[in-house]
Amino acid sequence: MVSVLSHNARKDDKILCAFKVYDFDGDDFIGRRDLEKLLDKLCGYNSDLEQQPDLQVVDVTEIQDVETPPITASGEGRQAQPGDGLKANRLSDEEKRVIIDKIFEESLMSNEEKLCLDDFAHIISKSPDFFKTFRVRI
Image 1 (cartoon, rainbow, N blue to C red):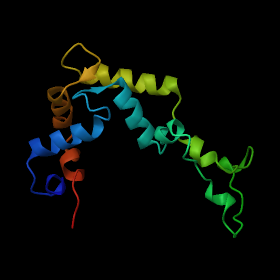
Image 2: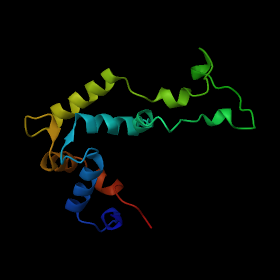
Image 3: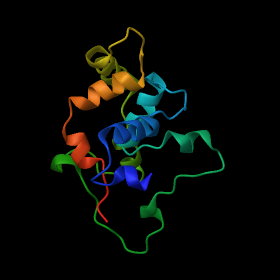
Image 4: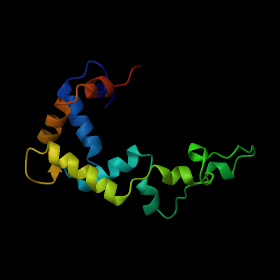
């Protein structure tokens, strides 16, 4: 995996690696559920924690000894509360649906609501920044 993240890795190898990363359910397609999970992760929300009752999200502001001044959004409205940061970035189901619909509308070469590797490679080919950013400098 590390060699795929090097500057010298072949573009095809990078595309395949990224495809596998985004194919959360491992069915060799990037479908609606994969994209929902991706959007959750990009927004800092971990839906896996909700599905595992033995894990708890801990708000660090409740365990710190040092008090921090309250933050208000735009200087008005209610003050931020502990735990707000965990919810603030979460997209609503409707927002995710609109984004995913747009992704499929603009990117699918086939008619199904899932991306195969060829569809994904086609999308990535339109994004030259992908190859500059999908790497690790050591």
